[in-house]
Image (cartoon, rainbow, N blue to C red; front, side, top):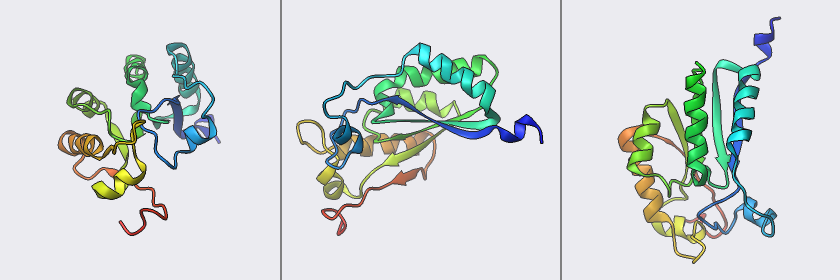
Length: 171
């Protein structure tokens, strides 16, 4: 067996523990309420790229995760650009609440072979039950806007992940 057979198909990297929301069921904030919420640095990103260069298949995937990865969009863009500069043809993607996505971000990501796993918890009232901003206002309008941009520019049928709780199961 060659060393290539032992390379990884996908890496999931945590680019930030910051989030613009305070979802009522969020494990990140529940576990780390009193901890500082940091962001991946360029130095760490360089180490990630080095690790991926040695351990990720040439057609592998790098998936961005975090509390909300787009709170650190600059590092996502840095990783993608640096990977392409060094000749890598990896695919990229993120699990996101969609609230921070803008037309500019989506149009750029659309050129990068980028995939999405969108966290939407049903229709407006159901979604807003748990997916709230720090002031307790619902995030549906912003999440739906971001999802609509993904559908318009990248994928008309993106993957959606949905958290069902006892308070939203009927929705």
